[in-house]
Image (cartoon, rainbow, N blue to C red; front, top):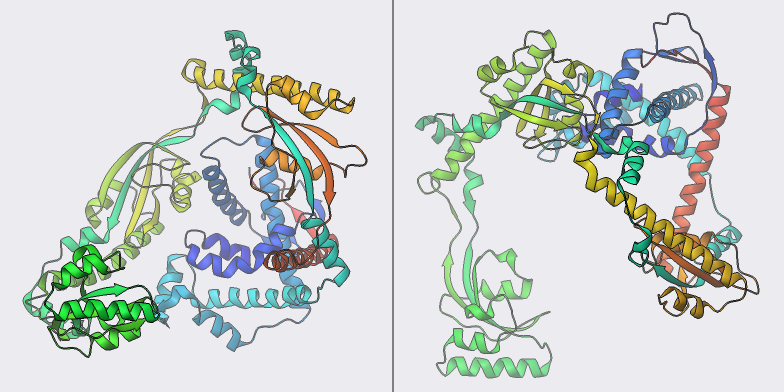
Length: 632
């Protein structure tokens, strides 16, 4: 099934994204449950959807991968049990939804032809070499994620069937003219607002912090001050450059490599020139260029005149020097003139879109093939890398086989056997750690149950195209509360921010009472010791307003005869006093590009709604059995 292949391809995003992308929109819209029957007898499956089984192993592997991604996004923060349970339910729901959708596509007769599957298979970018499909590259890539070409083609066929079903639903959607006008009226709406900011600094006297408050805050927010989960990690890196440096070179082999790849070391004709640019391309510019040309013909130095007259900032201070370049480095008119000249010749004014140029050709370097002797350092480096690439691939495959067979449990021994660089990281968290970085694939390989046990080697995981790593956990440290003493200043700052924000919000609330009673806005903010800009109409996405102020302005009811007032607590501390005095309905035409984007956005939203409703119906009709002990 599609989710299964998604699990296998998590560590190879180039493949997973192309296959599962068409389902991303559907998954984002789903949210309902199907008919669920839960049995508490021992189960040999994790999930059944209309009789089709999904194994507990598959679901647990997916959960480990998703958990690693969540943890990285949260910089290693520990999730509360309720949040974990909700996320696990979400994962199961994804499997249910995908399965019922695929089942419906098959039962409704949607089919992908062999030609369509072959085309999709051969167009996969990961299987291309020099812009063309390569069967060997495809087999190699698929083998790295445990798939055969036949299995991948089968998954592709199912994906194409589902896309036929979902695209048919989406393409049937449309918006009427009345609906579009209503969208423009709402989305392009403007509201007249005025606001004053009450910064927390003005309420510092109300934010005096004592040790009792600090201790109370720390106790109430202990989860915010946990040390992140971490491991002491041993790692080994297989690097292409390291292999290349160990390649010995035999002269006959290097000569054969050079002869086979000689075209890579050929160079087109290059020319070295100077120029003077007169930026005007009108008659006055031509006259100026003719004047400068006259000065050159009278014997004046080209470089001095370039520094004096040239409008080209890149070359003027170098006397107009353009360096060595091929024909395609310049615009056509300039290239045609330059490559028709002889060394030492100075051209008549040449017109381009930049103005008029006076060109002087200095030297010509004819097209030629770099000899082995002249290009030896580069050719040797290329040869070493080519040889190392084959060795790198072989060693990566051998490492994978050893790990799968369970014959490799000593990381230091493997590193020595395969020429890998061995190292340790004292404190690697779900946010990563130098020098391995924080790629999700790396974090996932470290923080899965098998690797954390310390009895298994994790990986191999690609750090880059030319670097692969293995991991072994030496010590595992679960999240733990940090002593108050070590986070004292951080806690005190949080208490101070909370107190000052509460005080500013309270002042804003009192101001609202005065304004609702008829007080003048300027008089009220003057009493608070703050100022406000004049009232102005703003849009829903106006960046000049704080986000919370803008949201409050557009979630407030439409004002009647009297303005509406709101007190708004700000995320960064402090508060705002907001006045909404008028509403101006939007319309089409003010920003054509924005209108087009709105129409597309809402059409897509409607299409998502169609898919969501369709999925809800499928789920409600489905028979779903869940093993209650899936993640235990």
